[in-house]
Every structure is written in structure tokens, then in C-alpha cells.
Length: 216
Image (tube, rainbow, N blue to C red; front, side):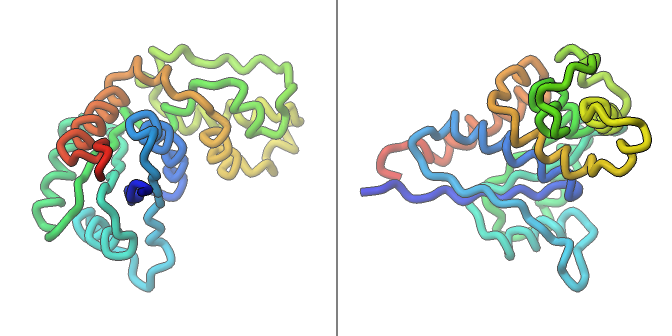
């Protein structure tokens, strides 16, 4: 008898943060290698009146994208990770009948988690064999970068090998999503406390809900 599918939803800060999907899918596969998982991104942009408050966005996401596990993404940016967790918990207090919820809180911005694979950046820039030195940051430095999104955009543009004029017409936003898709192994992120906390929360939730049991 096939095991039932685990339905998961990602509610992110913005559309560019949809790039977290491959990261979360990688984690889910390692935690639940024998369980089918569906992971969807809650796209609320096309609603007549997209909700603005976090508790409203959570409630709408669960309504439109029913799931057993909801990932709620908030970049830390200036507030601390604990501040963001508190913000998410307060929002959940105002929502009825929520599924299991896991906070996804990269330090600074989500893009810091994509500054780990030079090959993926070159592929996303449509120039996989490029030789222009990119000057990739070390993994331990990524959480200290003030503007990881700006740096990732700069690295993608540099990796194209195009002239400065032609780089301006390159769709760096689309390329950013491809960076995430081209990364095959996110295990290096385990060196970062924020990612490690995410993985620990996921393992704990899976264990408490017994989603890894054979009879589920």
C-alpha cells in the first residue's frame, strides 16, 4: 500500500523567495526519503486584495493551499532571529486551525543561502564554461554580508561574461531562481546556525507527527 502524500506549503516574504523551494525540497527528501511529498509556494499576488498582515497571509495560504506542514519564511534582516520567531508565533495566535508550522529565517536574506555554488551561478547566468573570476565568499562569511541579494545579483551578472551594457538587459531575477534549482547539494549550509535550526525544527516536527512511520 503506497504511503500517503505529505502536503507542504511555503509562505514567503516575496516572490523572489520562491527560490527557497529547492532548499526545502532537499531537506524534506533527506528527512523523509521514502515518503511522497508535495511542496507548493503560496502565490497570493493575484488575489483581488492580497493580505498584508502576517496572520492574514498565513490564514489565506492555508485556505488556498491546504497542507499538513506550513513553512513560514521571514528574512531576519535587521531584527534578530528570535524577534522573527516571536513575530511568527504572535501571528499564529490569531489564526485558527493551522497545520504544523516551521519558521524559515535566514540571517539577513534568503539569498545568503544561494552564495554557495559557483557552478550553479555560472549555469544560471547561461555561461557554464565562463572563466571570469567571481570572487565567491566563504560559507562562514555569508551570514555577515550586509546585502546578500545585491551580491548574488552582481555575481550572476559577472558570470554572464557580457559587456557592461549587455549585462543591464540580462534578467537577473529569473536567473536567481535558476541558481537555486541548479544547486544539487545544500549540505554545506549546515555550517550556518540559521539553516541548522531549520533542519532541527523539521526533524523534530516529523518525529512528533510520526510522518516517518511506515504505517502513515
